[in-house]
Image 1 (cartoon, helix red, strand yellow):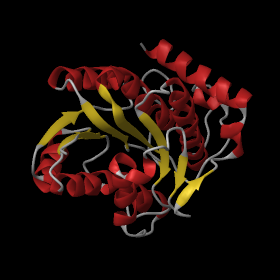
Image 2 (cartoon, rainbow, N blue to C red):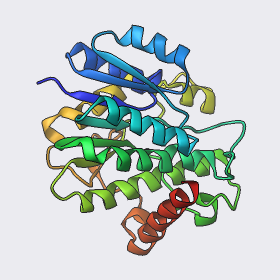
Image 3 (cartoon, rainbow, N blue to C red):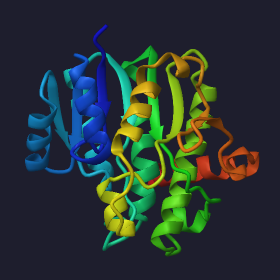
Image 4 (tube, one colour):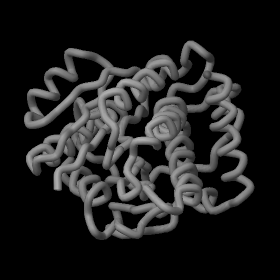
Length: 262
C-alpha cells in the first residue's frame, strides 16, 4: 500500500538515500531542505511521486509555515521522519538568541510534529533521529543562556529528542507510533565528514533502519522505544532519559522555548 512519507533534511545523506529507497517502492515522498536548488537536485535523484518543501529549521516561523504548507496540500500523512540535524556550525546562535543545535535537533522537530499531528494517521509512525551520543541536558544551554561545545550540544539535543519521543508516545496511546532511532554511528553523511573528517560507514545501514522504523513490522509495537542500530536492537537510552525529574524539566524547557519563539 502506497504511503505518504515526509522526511526532513532529505537533500543529502541518510535522508536522501532513505527517500530514494522509499520512492523506488512507490511511496509518495515529501522532501524537505533549506534551499530550492538542493531540493530540485534531490527531487531529480529521488524521482517518482515527489514534492519539495523549503524551510530553515533554525527559524520557528519557517517551521510553522512548513507545517501549514504540508497540511494545506495533504489531509493524511502516514510517516514523518524527523531526520534533519546539525553538529558543527559557524554561528551557534539563532536570531532569537537560542542555540541552533537545540533548535534544529530538538525544538523544530517537536514543533513540526505537534503541528502535523492532526493529519498523521493513527496507524502511522513518527520516527525521530537520535544518536548513540546522548548526554544529560544542561537546561541553561537549552534555554540559550549558556554556550557549550558542538559535541556536547549535539549529544544533549539528541537526548532531548529521545526524551520527547518517550513523553509524546505516552500521550498518543492510541497512535501514531513514536520511536527514537540511532541509525548507526559515524555513517558517511556530510555531518560526519565535516564534523570528524572521516569518510564514515555505509549510509545504507542508516537508510535501511529508517525504512524499517517507518514501515516495518518489527516497529509495530515500538511506541516510546529507542532503537540502537549499533547493537541492532531496542535498548535503553541514556539513564537521564529515564529520570522522571530530568525528563519533566526538559519537556518544560522545550515548551517554554517554543512559547517564547511563537
